[in-house]
Amino acid sequence: MTHAKDFLTNPWVTAIRLHTLPAIIAPIFLGTCIAFHDGILHPTAVVVIVACALLIQIGTNLANDYYDALNSVDTPDRTGFVRATASGLIPPTHMKRAWIFVFSIAVLLGFYLLYLGGLPILLIGLLSIAAGILYTGGPYPFGYHGLGDLFVFIFFGIIAVTGTYYIQAVATLSYFPLWFPPGTITTMSLIASISMASLTTSILVVNNIRDMETDEKAGKITLSIYLGKFWSKMEYLFLILLAFVPPIYFYIFLNFPKTVLLPLLVSPYAISLVYLVLSDPTPPSFNKILKHTTFLTLFFSILFGFGIFNPF
Image (cartoon, rainbow, N blue to C red; front, side):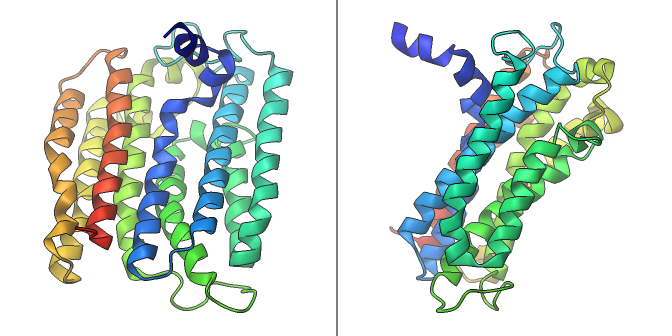
């Protein structure tokens, strides 16, 4: 028990932010289930996709830790999880080397995906890494200018699901694609990705509502600051509701069996989280809501995925 506690409180483990990693596993799982349903499952590709995605997510977290400290955004009065660079636990130079190293490993592994997926994967990979750095780095960090929600919606939802499906679909071809071949981005994968895009974005919304006061003082203008607390809560409500639309769409319009409605089993869990957000909790309480919204995303993905390939 002591060893586990020591591990979780290690500065590097803290900087990696283990609690955020299910948010990238969930859409990959869903995209893989759709590929399984369509008979194009590529197990080796899935393993490499997961590894690359985790490395990009970890690299993004480390870069975020580094740049938030560099830009004096992480102040002592913030109520979120401990930030390793700002708190002095890890020197900035070490943190910078770490995120560069992690992204480099992701690039090396990505050559296999490039071999399978062609130039579109090169584009997706470079955009993902660039977005991870520019989220809080560069001359115009879009996470500081109200664009973080859009970033998460696109990269953690749309691209994560459809990209996972695309690589497995294109792996069946016998040539190196220069663009997306017909049939490798399907309507099914696009619609399903909306659920993951909505839920992963709702995680960020909780984070931003919690940090509204300290972010504004530090000059970090998130979408929640633009919208205000009330409309940010409405955004959370809307995103949670939107997540349940694709399973219902699959059942009504795509003639899937009732198993595709399995995500409705977590609707009481989702309702309880919406209630907590709307009840105006204290900033520290948002940390628990943040974790539970991440769990909701993972549980939803598992149920939706099983419902799609219907192993029952």
